[in-house]
Image (cartoon, rainbow, N blue to C red; front, side):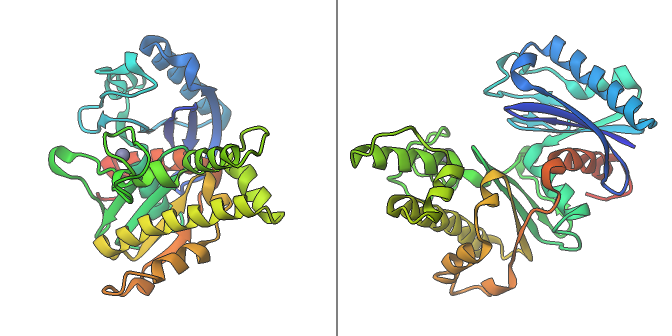
Length: 308
Ligand SMILES: [Zn+2]
């Protein structure tokens, strides 16, 4: 059984995952409580002991999937927005010493890509791109069955290819990145600003509420949904043009409200020079525990029987 640690901007989840990708026990805690590294890592260790006890399991290794910039092969954190105090800290060494097992760390987009490839919607696909759309856009690329890494083993950022160079400012320095246009946050920002400009007074709506409003026939909400489908579809079309993968697996909170068919329609408007129909678009299938399952997959790919 592998201890799985999912470090995100909102919560840190810890679970125990068997070698079929099933979560036997899980606990979680708000990230905001763990901003000091020494307390954070001690708390993660306590949560690991707790899930081991709950599942009556024996820990054979620990896999970590984390948001933010990190160095998977040294185990160190780089600059993480919500964890300034964690820079240079090394959970791989610290948890390895604490539990006496091998620990593997990976970006959470890469972790989820590995999880979906091993045990989810992408099983058996050798060229797979995983994209998660929530408050940001992240993902991972698997080519010929292996996790793609760039120079210095860097993790590519699919969310920061530019869709509209005159679009909204992105945190990376450019304007109009996919992430600046197609996240739930971007959708809500556009809708709320248009609604206020049109003199509609009321509370700011979330992306989920805008999708619901669109179903009642509200024209502005429908326009926001159409715009969301268009920008999501454009980014996916770019990935298809660049990689022609067997499958693109889509996860994240916003995908609960999106129809894959609407995305496919946008893709079919372009992509004329590649056989885009051969790229299957699928919803992520690992559900709520996807990140934990992905974190366990990280360990299996680094130290177990699954080769990456
Ligand atoms: Zn960007």
